[in-house]
Every structure is written in structure tokens, then in C-alpha cells.
Image (tube, rainbow, N blue to C red):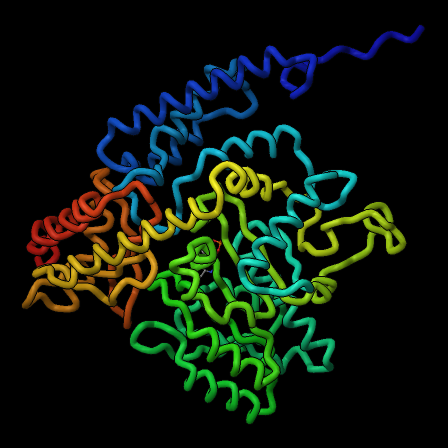
Length: 486
Ligand SMILES: *Cc1c(COP(=O)(O)O)cnc(C)c1O
């Protein structure tokens, strides 16, 4: 008899033979996570304020060729290299980017997503998972107001969803016989940079994205859009797509979708609605009317990992007409041969092996229901409105615009302070808030000037919590003015 192969150490595999090891490891991990959360609750802000060079050093010191061989020791080391200084999005003084605290049903689903490791490309790698994803796609499409011909697919994020939406638009334009060099994409000046990136990746000409002016509320100006569309055509070029944003990253502005849709239709342009941020309004009966017209889009981006309180990654691209998704289909003999009858999702996706992210949203909806998500969205929108009202009356803080979704753009600028000093102060205030571990706010530019931005996505944050941050901004403004002026 040939000798048996060496046993090797299979203890680390997720396997029924090692169920006790698995449970012990997971309990250790859960305790470690709970301890970290408890420790965080005792700290004063969302992060410790570690600087990049310090963070880089502790990581670089780890020798990856010398394993610790012990989960407890590895967890302790993991805390040193990352977790101890991590930024916690549930902390009410974390008000920087579009990051949300996550709902626990989704977190629970993550465990199953990774442990079972289903891959959503084909039925034989995911079985029911294929239909869970399809059911959620159909459900979201229904909320958008698409009809029975709609379809879609989960993606890694809004960037990928936007890329795929524009990819479909490009291929529709190419199929109509237009040369790639003639294709133009119209998006508002406040649209997301991933639109520019997608145009570049799709091989369009460097000036393919035509920027459309916004009105005083930072929404795409339909008159300017009409002019831009006519201008593109007068130049002998082709308006391949109009990208409307439903919730701009800075001001939460929702472009006037019915007017934009009418113009896109009139000029034969594909309408892509980037609702990466505003997509959460679909869950709120009160706020849903703000998205009226979204059902006229050809494709829509929704980021569940923003306003649906899902862990990263969770996003989808939805299309009004399922036939368009065929533009990304490529037949591989071993996976989705042309004659195969088995359902698959790989035909609709830019990815092949793909996480079962849909399960997170599924468990969220089955435990909490969509209304609970809608309530969260309403809470953060109402909070931003309340903060905006306070800042509008503030003697030292200046509000850039009335909040529309859950962002607040403002700066420290008491009477008499120059624009240049206000610019310098914005950056200094932001970095000082981080370094002191007080709060985390974002920065942006408005009309070439530096402003601060609060992005509110924490349904548990109170008005007082957020006013504590704006008070800290004002106090730092006073403290740092002399320093900056010197
Ligand atoms: C966040 C965002 C994106 C990009 O989405 P990711 O999930 O970060 O890739 C695109 N568009 C808008 C309007 C966004 O707010």
C-alpha cells in the first residue's frame, strides 16, 4: 500500500471535523470585537488620531514569514496594527465621509457569506443565492418604478455600478454605429468623479465628459443641459449618455430628474441616474417623492453600503431593459457556454467570482424590513436639516447651502475674517480635530474655496452630538486664527 499523504494541519479549515475549533475561534473573535467596542465607548472621539508614519511603522515591523501560530496573539497584534486606532463610524463625532454604521443582521449575514463562500457567477456555485440576488434586484427595480423588463446585478460599489452603466450606454451607442471618438457624456459639475474615471476606462476621448452647470441649489440646470446637448450635436458629436445625480456627494442635491429625463429622451441619450447616495430614499415613503422621475432612467446606481446601512461592499446596477445587460456577456466554455440552460449571473456582471453580498441586504430586510431603513434615512436627513438651521444663525460659522440630504457644508468665518484666512483655517481645523481625537469632518471646495463638510449617516447621533462638533470647529477657529495669520 502506498503511504498515506501527510496529514498537514487542516485545523484551520472551516470543516465539520473542526467544528469545536471553529466555535472556539469565533468566540475568541467575538469577545475581541466586543472588547474593542467597549474600549471605543470610553474614548472621546471616533479615532485616536494616529498619524500615517506611525501607522505605517507598526505594520512594517510585522514579519509575515514568521506566523504567531496562535489566534489570541494574532488578534492582539491585529489590534496594534489597526483596530486600536481604527475609525469608528458609529461614533457620533464621526461626520466625515459617506460611511455608515452597519446593521447587525447584515453583519450576521457576512459570516455566512464568507463561511459558505458561495460565488454568484453561476447557479452551480451559488444555487439559491442566484435567486436571492435576483429577488433583491427585482425588488429594488420595483421601488425605482421599473417595469417587468428590468434587471440588474450586485457590484462592488458605486464606482463599478457607474462604470457598468456607462459601459452599457457606450456599447448601445457603438451598436448604433457611432464612432467611439464622437461619444460624449453629460454630467453636472457636481457629479461624482467616477464618471470621469469610467469615461477614461471605456476608452472615450479625454474631453468626453461635458460638464453641465448647476443652479444655486447645486442641481443640474436643465436649461444648461439642453444647451449642452444641442451644442454636442451641433459639433457633429453624439450625446452617448446623460448622468443625473440623485444625491450629490457634497450637497446631497438631486438633479431635476423629470426635466433631465425628457431632455435625454429628446436627444436619444442614455440616462444613467447615479443614486449611490440618494438611493436610500427609496426606502422612505416620505422622502421617495424626491426621486420622482428616476423610473425613466435606463440605468441606476444604488449603493446599499451608504444609505442602506450595509457593510462594504454592497451596491447594484439596475437597468430598465434587461436586454442591455447582454453587452457584458462573454461566453466561456467551462462556465456559461451558449447552450447551457442553467441560470447564471456572470452574463450580467463585470466580475466572475463574486461575493454573495446580496445576502446582507436580504437578512436586513427579512429581520428589520425596509421601513426601518427608511426611518434611519429620515432621521439623518432631519438631523442635517436641524443642524443647517442652527448654522444659518451662527455668528462665526457660515453655511454654504441649505442641507438637502444628510450633508452640511460650512466653514469658520466670523465677520471680518478674509477668505484666504478662512481657507487656511478650514484645513487646520480639520487636521487638528483628527489629531486631537475630537471628531472627524470632511473637507471640500466650493467656488475654489476650502469648506468643511459634515456627512451625517448615524441614526443614533443627536442634534447635541453634532452641535458639539460644530462648537469644536468654532472654538478651534478662534484658537488657530492668530497662528494662521502669523
Ligand atoms: C460614493 C459615491 C460614488 C462611488 O461609490 P463607491 O461605492 O464609493 O464606489 C458614486 N457616486 C456618488 C454620487 C457617490 O456618493
